[in-house]
Image (cartoon, rainbow, N blue to C red; front, side, top):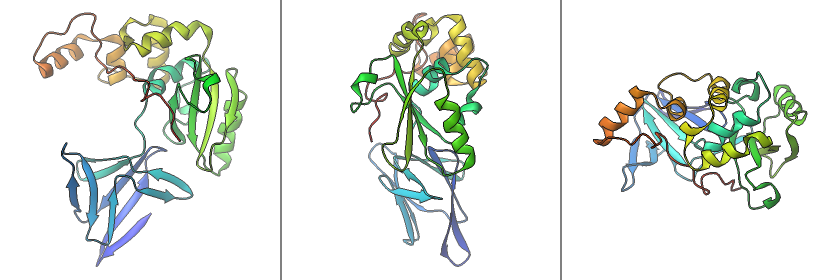
Length: 250
């Protein structure tokens, strides 16, 4: 989506995936911050302003602006940050020999959640709500078929025109792993589970999930330098999930 500002100055808004929009412009916006120095509004010559809480629709898909970040000369509008359920539990319900691209992780995939108060029967740490932004395309219909025929598939829910949510059961052999993940003890998972997660996302050294799982010495020393203190051997390198962050709210 291209917005003409003034003269030859333009603003282009481009979807990166179902969670993130990229803003590029040949002019620098006026930037407003809150007391925590987080961006809350971008003002492009008072012709177009983008702020936290806005809704942007592109090609029939709706994005909520919940966070605005700047990297280099570009701004990014964040609809949703990935949950720990997405990062650690989604691979556990995936089919053997599949990777994230089979699930259109960087295209239609929105997020995963363990809890949804509208469906308490599935909010038991034994099921996963896998959420996708709905797209009217042949490729997306193929994705729906792929997941509906998944061996862990329970049901699908269409709460509105923007989302499709698939409920998948978490295999019994991974129930204990879910509890370990919820405790933030990612490095204590079995090696076979660590490998499954790493292979699903094709992770390498330096990735936060990789570091959380394998706790490489390089990552430990880097965090110790940042914190200015020695890290105990039983301490994780990644934040612990909260029930709030792993809960679906629509």
